[in-house]
Image (tube, rainbow, N blue to C red):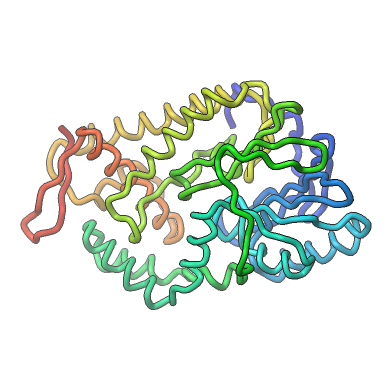
Length: 342
């Protein structure tokens, strides 16, 4: 982890066991069956109960931990609402189940709510066909494509049906949770309209995946928007956070450990992506298929799951450089797009 950060809670809680990480804030860690191998869920004191921020994926272990929490530590003070920061399964996976189980409302940004609904309606066959065409256009060979498509996509199996109505969260809103006022902030790049919460009075910042201590969150291009610039959106969000969120907040992220020194971490993340663009610029003096750039950015061996995210992340940097005029695209001999640095 970064040597510039401070970690007031240097040891994570045991899986499923809530610990008070700040006054009126419980930290619960759930396991995940893929990297990262955990997600941090937070419970915010909310009058007679607790507002839930994110839920874990839809699997038997996570439901078991929730049942144990509801029967034990939360028995006298149950969830008052569920806030889902974004559409990824480790965050929204049990939101529908938990709102139904506890008869409470769901709060999300509109884009994240609709994106969840969209992904839950795709069949595996539709997803596989979209990814196959996407990988082929970017120059990935058939063997590598087949290996990645063998992994279980199955978004709808990792999530549950959301309620048909929800509370829309918009940047600039203020959520009153217990006696605290949390400013709603949103950011793009990792997901379309990820929700973050800031309590200035108590110096608490809950950025979900947008700012993590150990790694950069995945910022990828996917088949649904092959010409998108998620990296540009992400860097814009980081700059806005640096300008608006105080440096001395206690950062409670969705992965890794809570930390202090937010601005140092924002600077590191921006520098990291600048350096990744430099690697691509040096590696591509001649036209190449985007797939050929992946091992330049990720030289270590990757499994199929990791390769999928490495592929999307590489394309995010390529698209960002194309938008900024640092690369150009041109048709290759087979009609597929090649790129080179300028």
